[in-house]
Length: 402
Image 1 (cartoon, rainbow, N blue to C red):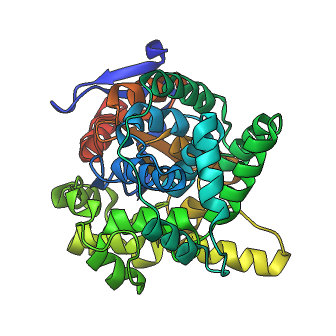
Image 2: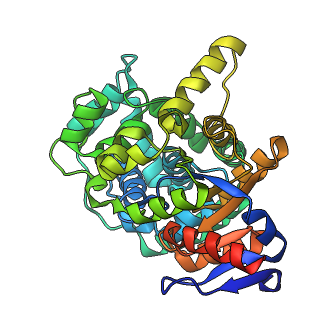
C-alpha cells in the first residue's frame, strides 16, 4: 500500500505520506477544518482513561466486585474505533460495559441481578444508580486471571466485528447473544434500562459518570450546572490535557491561505476545549466551530420535526459540512482528524461535496503505530505525525508540483 504514496521528510516527529494522486489537489487548498482531540489537543492521558474509569466504576458497582480498569487498554479502545462507529467516547464506554455485562460469569450475573432488583426506581436513573453506589459496597477481589484473559481476547474480536453504525450494531449482536440464556437476557435488559443510554449528562448513568471523572468535581459543576454525585473530590482527567496546535502553525497557514479560514468539527464538548485551548480558539471563525453541543441540539431538533432519533455524529458528515458552510468561499478544504471515523466522515462528506481532502494525524492517537497502519491501509490522502506539519506540507506540495 505504501507504493501509492510519496514519503515526505517534514520533521523529526515521524513519517509523512502524500498519496500520489492528491498532490495537485493540495495546491488548491485554502481552508482547513480540524477535529479537536488528538489534533488540536493532546488527550492521550484523559479520554481513554475516562472510558476505562467509567467501565470500571459502573461494572464494579453493578456486581459488587471491583473490575480491573487496566483491562480497558488503548488496544481495546482502538479496536472499537477502527470500525468508524465510535466518535463518541460515551458510546464506546457503553459498548464495553454492555459487552462485559453479557460476558459475566454466573456468580456475578446473580450478584448484579440482585443489586439491580434492589433499586427502587424513581424515574431519575442517575440518582437511582447513585443510591445503589451509596448503599452497596464494592469488594476489592481480584477477577479470575483466566476470565480477564478470555475477556480481553473476546472483546477485541467483538470490537473487530462492529460496523460503522457503532452502538446500533453492538446492541443487535449482544441482544442476539444473550437471548440464549434467560438469566443473561433479563440482566442485560435491566442494566440497559438502568443506564438509560443514549442520554445526556444528568440523564444517562454512562454520560454522567464519564463527564464527572473527565471534568472533575469543580469543573463539572461549573460547566454542566449539576452537583457531582459520583466524583465529589477527584481532579478531572481533563487537567492532564494540553494543546498540540501551535500559534505559529495557524499564523503560517493564514499566510498560505491569505486569510484565517479555520473551522472545527468535533464530537467532543466546547467547554473542555475552551478550558485547554483558551485564546487559541479566537483564531478560528466562530460560526465554523462545531462541537457536540451543536450536534446534539441539531439531533433534538431533527427528532422534534420527524419524530425519529437522528444520529448526526461522525461518520455522519453534518459537522464538517456545517463548519465548511461558514468558511465559504473556498476552493478545497482539508479536514484534519486522528481516527478512522474521521476518515469515513470525509469520505461521506465528499459524496455530497467533493472538495474535501482528509489529513490523518497519528502521533497523539494511541497506539500511534496502529493508527498510522490503519490510515495507510485505508488509503487516506495525507498522513502526518501532527497537525503542526500541515503548513510545511502545503508549502512543499506547491513547490513539488510546479
